Length: 334
Ligand SMILES: [Zn+2]
Image 1 (spheres, rainbow, N blue to C red):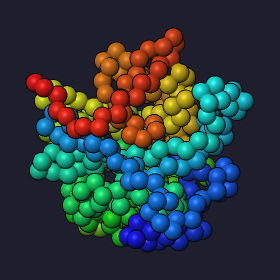
Image 2: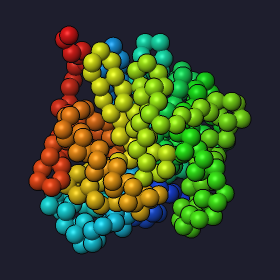
Image 3: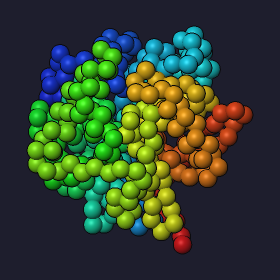
Image 4: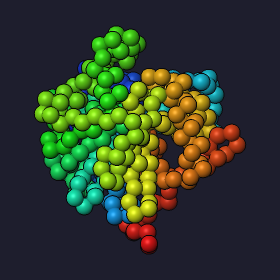
């Protein structure tokens, strides 16, 4: 029941609000929502747990949104994009995951990104419910690290002007904060991007008022287990986070990949909501080349839940291999 009331509340809160960034325009896709009258009619809570050294990491699904990728991706024709999806039996409007990551160090609960909150309507904003079901109520979260300030990553920080994570400190890059707070940048942004400035500022405002915002510049060890790494392009202060414990590590890559079917094979393809497409492309190409070399575990926010896997070189591009689902939580033997 709690879940139902939250979804209803979010749908109401989203009424009249146009989704932005990673969001489907109203009416995209032809799916018909099934009225939820019993628990058997709703998706199971999306969380997936694994051990990384001493850490317990829980991947959380904030929901999924149908994105018109043939309209959003740039650098390929819409026909070519459609053909690429069809080749693997998919459509360009298949649901796209919004994933977040909770790192439990034993002494701290650190969340990477906060989902969409009320901004995308009933598709999304499930993070607080999923956190609760995974054993981590929102008020027990000590820190939230933002990869960047876009509705599907920072929107969930604040709902109806209230902090969703009342005891959390928020970390983001100084460059990211400066960009979204700049009236000059806002004036320069295209009409469809202007609303993101208002949404980003609204997400951060109550934490700033509470003295809970913290900024970093360049590669920075924020916690013994977590290092922020600049990855600009998608937004000016877009950041990766490398999580490490006992020689194991995983790289949280934020929005380096939006549409896996296209951008692993064609990392030159950009997205409409990249602030600097050329820089986003360069960051993606460099990062995928490194990851194919190191074979490091990747945690991706928009690769289908739980978004864990590896990349390998494949011709001039790359291929994603999802990490096998593991029904047991095990720790690598030392
Ligand atoms: Zn995103």
